[in-house]
Every structure is written in structure tokens, then in C-alpha cells.
Amino acid sequence: GENVEQHPSTLSVQEGDSAVIKCTYSDSASNYFPWYKQELGKGPQLIIDIRSNVGEKKDQRIAVTLNKTAKHFSLHITETQPEDSAVYFCAAMETRYDKVIFGPGTSLSVIP
Amino acid sequence: KAGVTQTPRYLIKTRGQQVTLSCSPISGHRSVSWYQQTPGQGLQFLFEYFSETQRNKGNFPGRFSGRQFSNSRSEMNVSTLELGDSALYLCASSGGQATDTQYFGPGTRLTVL
Image 1 (cartoon, one colour):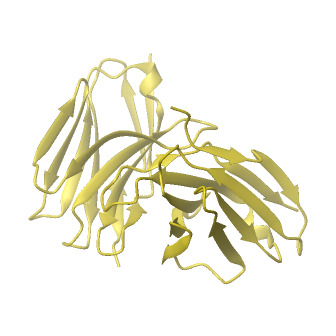
Image 2 (tube, one colour):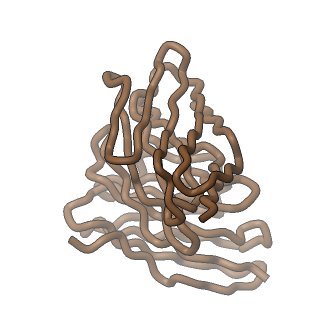
């Protein structure tokens, strides 16, 4: 089955700097890759997603890139703000089984 | 549009008891998935229901079961609770088609003493 790895597990950046989180997946049949943000005491919230027919997608300060050949995808957050502090999860969907597999998460801290 | 709701939000049980958690999906969504979140294991898929049928299942023992009603609301049951079942249980709803976005509820925090 699908396996998703995520790095780093913790990330600390100064406000205004960029943050990059990288994920790899194992199943070449996966073709949907969502990113979720989870704040303390809340459920994960979708922040951006990318499908395998697209190499890059951007939404304001957030961008995601996908390299299907290498089976890795990354989240880029520019001009970070304290409210970006949260745990971020990447995920891959095994469309054959319609099941989302999550990475272990990255705890991002943005220092004012 | 109202989001995914889960009840109760917090629950304390003792070993050996059983528990039932409830999830109401976003209106119009027919798929409900359940996940267990723990600090050590992260987010792990339990099962998914679509139109009252279990469509996918993760690698959890038979003590974990679920069902879905005709209005798409779903319940998850855990029997013979163990200390290791303490976790945040999340449900997510979607339209049910491949690659449809999953929207999560706030979760139910279960503590087993």
C-alpha cells in the first residue's frame, strides 16, 4: 500500500521568511495530493491540493510542487506569519482504494 | 454551509467499556471516513462509508466498527476499550468520488482510564 514520508518533523522560522516541507510517496498510482493544516484543538483543514496532471499550484502565499517521476511533492509558504504556526500534513490518495494516506506531520513555528 | 460535526467532543471511559462516536457530514456529502490520531502513530485511516456501505477499511482490529445511516450520518463504535485506544477520533466527509476533497470535523477526544 501507499506510504508517505514527510520532512522535517519540526520547523522553526522567523516571521517573514519562507518555509518548505517535503514529502515522498511510494505508490506511483497515487494521483491526488492534499495538504492539511491542523491548529491546536481543531481538525485538519485543507489548505491546498494538487493533482498528478499538474506540476505546480499556487494560492496567495502557499504553493505546492509535484514531481511524479521522483514521487515527491513540497509545500512552500512565503512571507510566513505567526498565524501560520500549526502542524502541517501532506497526504496521498490511493485512488484505486479511494483512501487518503497521511504523512507524519510537520510542526511549524513562526517566531515573531 | 455547515461543516462536519462530531459528538461528543470529549469522552472519558474505562478499560473494557464500549463507546459510540457520531459524525454528521456536510450536507450533500455521501462519504464519511474515520481516522484515529495519536502522537505516536499520527493520522491513521480506520474505515470509509459510502451510501451506507463500508467501502474501505484500514488495519484496525475488529473491535473498531462503524455504520452509516440513510441520511449519511455515521457512527463509530469501539468495544472492549484498551488504554491504547486513547486518541483523537476524526471524521471527514466528501462527495465520495475519487480525489474529492475531504473535510474534517473537530474530532472527539477519547480518554481511556
